[in-house]
Image 1 (cartoon, rainbow, N blue to C red):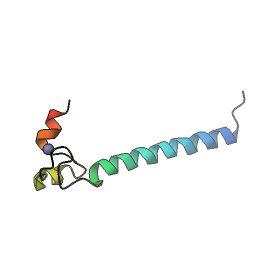
Image 2 (image 1 turned 120 degrees about the vertical axis):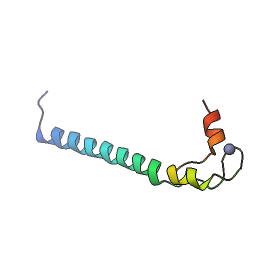
Image 3 (image 1 turned 180 degrees about the vertical axis):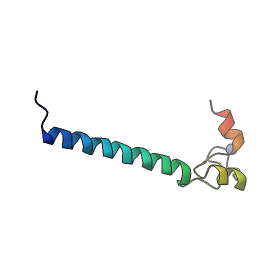
Image 4 (image 1 turned 90 degrees about the horizontal axis):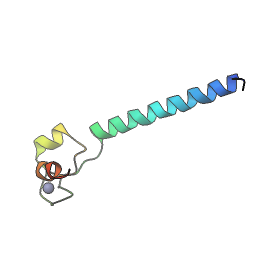
Length: 67
Ligand SMILES: [Zn+2]
């Protein structure tokens, strides 16, 4: 099979889409909508934890229980 410009273009497009998706995932993890209340037990999530992990949706207790 001969690799043409179209194949290269498609491969590059796919690679950049994957890169964009990875960046979006990373940004969501860093700045994504978290929760003010623990999704598991309903307790408020301490501000320090939300500052450290803005996307957190559970309190430290629940996060450490999940395994
Ligand atoms: Zn909790």
